[in-house]
Length: 88
Image 1 (spheres, helix red, strand yellow):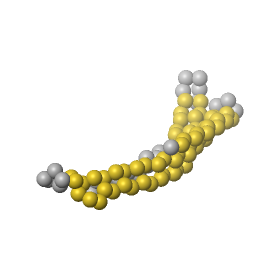
Image 2: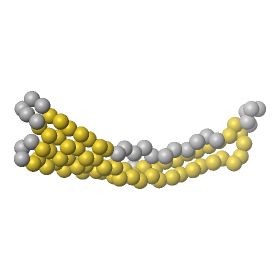
Image 3: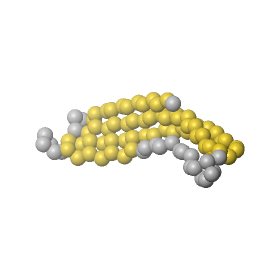
Image 4: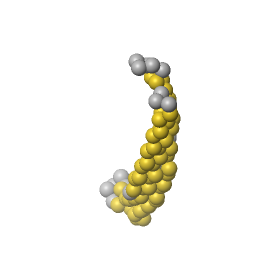
């Protein structure tokens, strides 16, 4: 598994700040399935599944200082959760 992140921030006229970010994620997953019958016997075939997931997630944030006591901000970001395997 691998994760890499980058973040950049820029300030305009001492009141407006913009932040950009990004994250690359790479994950490998394995699943092993063994069926056990109601009588306790293990049935064949044994199943093994592997898969890889990759994603780039971004982020943007804006911050504006209205005064020394007040700030307005907004943030938009993406998240990532890799896939999985079911038992069915």
